[in-house]
Amino acid sequence: MQDVLFNSLLYKADRDLVEIARIVGEDPSPHEERAKKTRRSIEEKLWDEDCGTYLDYDLVDGRPIPVYFGPNLAGPLYAGIVEQDRAKRVVDTLENEGFGLADKDVTPIPSYDLHGFGFSEERYWRGPVWININWFLMHGLEAYGYQDHAQRLRRTIIELCRDQGFHEYFDPLTGDGLGSILFSWSAALLLDVLLEEGE
Image (cartoon, rainbow, N blue to C red):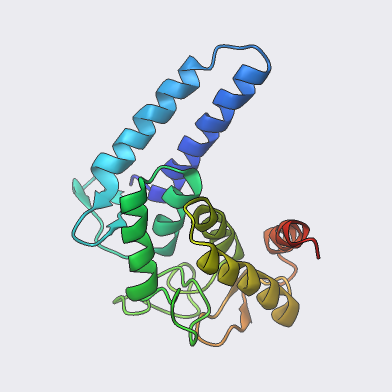
């Protein structure tokens, strides 16, 4: 499978290596070439124009996997892959297609489309809210100028950890903490958000 989030983070890592290479006086071109190739592949192969989202790709069947998945919307925004018009389509999907970004009755963002055939508020990656995905999406939305949505995700990260503790993931309908408790990336990303807030 070619995974949208994994490849988005690979692109971002290569872009970061470009900057590091420049700082230390090394040749950044190998990293630049890999980043360009990854971005081009994501945009050409994983974007679905009809759905307004990025879809993972099944290499065995040779086709996209037609499932709305929260990390697939967060990754390309966080990595800076998306052009502004496509970013608007992604945000429209987040607002209108079962991810609750514009719905006050949903804890954003579910990892899986609330209306999807496999949605479960408790099953791994079938609906629960993950702090790390919200953190990626928060930064991506900020970079593309969607400050209100980014602020909602910032508040969500703070409130979930404050009210429920450092759970692995959270119920998108009730906000209840699920999975492991004292989960390190939830705690670490809360600290990052609080430091940015100056709290």
